[in-house]
Length: 160
Image 1 (cartoon, rainbow, N blue to C red):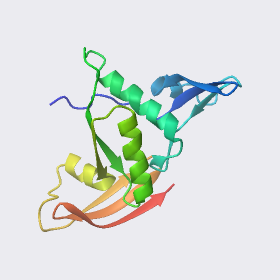
Image 2: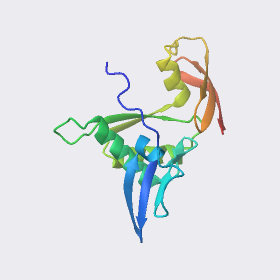
Image 3: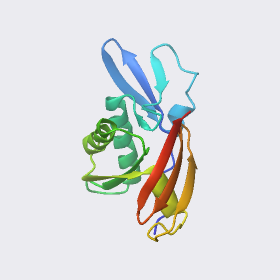
Image 4: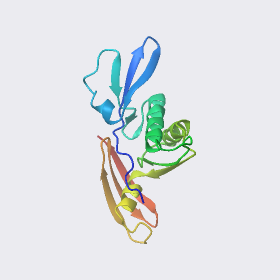
């Protein structure tokens, strides 16, 4: 059991030169640039309210994260990826997240609703026939869910 292998903010610094765009920094390094960049560099958040706001930048960010986790590997990484999604995300939003991860080099992509992941991580009895209430206060969304029998029985998502 490795525990947390990567803890980075979802921020990307992009340099614009004419019609060309290139990634300057990703994660913590890019977050330090927020509000402090010259005119041709913009630090952006490719995810908004738990869904993709900029598909190509999100793909580059995921590719960077995958490579960073596997930087000591001799082979090209092709991981199985588990991504948490808001309960109220649409099928189109979920498909975009899946496609972005596959484009970044993931072999397989699994999506799990954020409150379910939080409940499993907290060790709640999600498989039992009794309810567990989860309140997940995130950066873009706050989700409240009732979980029972390995599923989300009811959920509300508030984008903040």
